[in-house]
Amino acid sequence: MAQNPPDTVSAVLARGRLGIPSVVFIVIAAAAPLTVVAGGATTGYAVTGVTGIPVAYLLVAAVLALFTVGYVAMSRRIVNAGAFYTYVARGLGRPSGVAAAFIALVAYNAMQIGLYGGFGAVLAQFLQARYGWDVTWWACALAGWAAVAVLGVLRIDLNGKVLAVMLIGECAVALVFDAVMVTHPVNGGSVVFDTLAPSHIFAAGIGAALVTAITGFVGFEGTVVFSEETKDPRRTVARATYIAVAVTGLLYGLSAWAMSVATGPDQIVAAARTEGTDLIFNLVSPHLGDTVVTIGRLLFITSLFAALLSFHHTVARYLFALGRERVLPAVLARTSRRTGAPKAGSLTQSLLALAVIAGYALAGADPIVHLFFWITVTGGLGVLILMTVTSAAVIGFFATTDHGESAWRTWIAPLAATLALGAILAVTLQEFDTLLGVDATNPLRWAFPAAYAAAGLAGLLWALLLRTLRPDAYAAIGLGAASVAAPLRDPALRQPV
Image 1 (cartoon, rainbow, N blue to C red):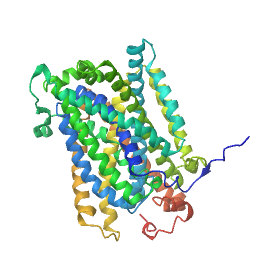
Image 2 (image 1 turned 135 degrees about the vertical axis):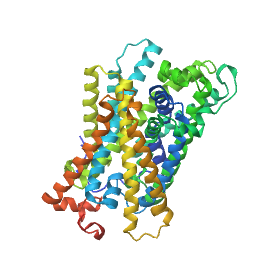
Image 3 (image 1 turned 45 degrees about the vertical axis):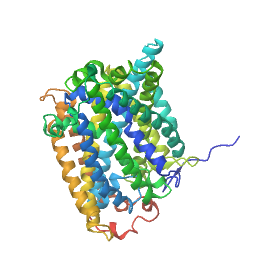
Image 4 (image 1 turned 180 degrees about the horizontal axis):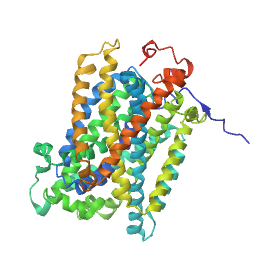
């Protein structure tokens, strides 16, 4: 009987598997449009009590478009699955890069694992309402976990096709629902735009609204994570990133506003708190047939699953990049010779997710609030930190590199993005209690952000230890595939930092 070829510690991932459409599908699937619309925006209204959620999505989209200018300019010169980690290492030095890597691992694992709470709870509710099956949330979460674990070690282009089908369906349903809500204002009244008013930007609690919005976009930056597996990294990454920001930003702003039209701007918070993730389905069900609403509910579930799968791939590739450069154990760079997938990183992420699901199940915690919302928005905070630091790293990189790029791409847009993201980060930290829906004296408001301070400090100390104890590994930080074959060939990275 033929046996599969053994796995191997690899310098590269499978090349040429992804084109622009595949990358767009994967990263927008991570952003999970229907999950954000039905789950994130609704929960954001309910927990923060802020009615400016729609304008927050549009503001964040504008800031992220600014961030993208320098981000994709750097992607044309650095092709590495490590993304933020690599960019920070090349722009601000190796210790900062490793600190960013540790923050990224916490942030993306939080995003991925937190989604299991939403997936499990929503699937359990659907099975109960539709078929009368009394299934626990964690049993449903484990079913999703098993599917992600299997798909995580298969060919990435196969995953792209699976995600494409799910994404097209959920975007279509979201737009249909939006049309229904806008054409049926509350009590037959007129369409109002109160929740889109720019004045919401300066309202109390806007920091919580902004980080809620940023959480909805997390995943778009993953275009760079898949750069090694694209057919043309220089062209594919840039176009896919801009498309992802534009599509998600417009859809989120439109959908969050449409819900406020259907409930009334003064009632959207109360409605979200009363009906939770059922709100959007309850708003459209009187005007659509049961079949359409049921399809929408199913696509909400598949949207959550698509996001789970996409973030799983992101974490696995970060672990692969860190293992390849020997920042973490080299076994994490082990890939499947049959599929080219980062098998060790994928299995590691799956085991961590399993442990967390088991812990929440044993603790009897609320899967929607305590796992889905709290943990995913904490993941969003981590990505906000990474984007802020990366914008500064873009400036540092181009300041010391011959590039031929315009000033707009190399320092004007990156500087503006750094300032804008830094301001959002400051307000977010100040209002994190509002985001969590807890009292200002609750220690959790600082405990979650403190996890990133601890991760960053651990990464910084680990880099300094590598510099002393394993100088070859330290010298290879940020080199990507070249770190295996010739870790000291890049003159730009030889200088001590």
